[in-house]
Image (cartoon, rainbow, N blue to C red; front, side, top):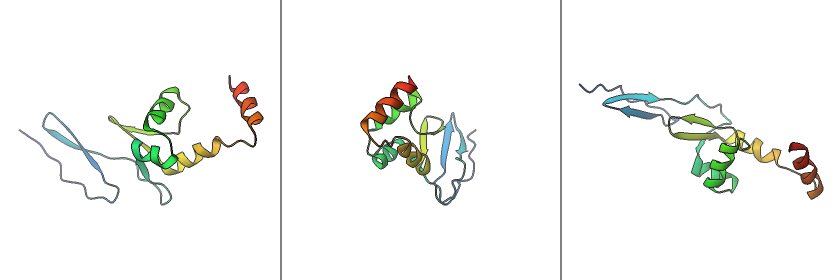
Length: 103
């Protein structure tokens, strides 16, 4: 017997998770008006970095905050912007001092 849930109609593009004939909605928390979700390739293009860099930064724990749903990873645009602002420095010596203090 194959059980199906009714399709979701949403402007946020809900996805469906299917496993052994069962289908269920995979719903992300609703973003506010100023936030939208980006998958890893779109997030990498948004910040101008490679997908591989974001994957490694997520593994190390020094990347932007992310949402994991199953095997998929999503980023809020606002979190990407905040993460990029954290990396601002006035000079190269300020970068060296912060890096030494973090170690």
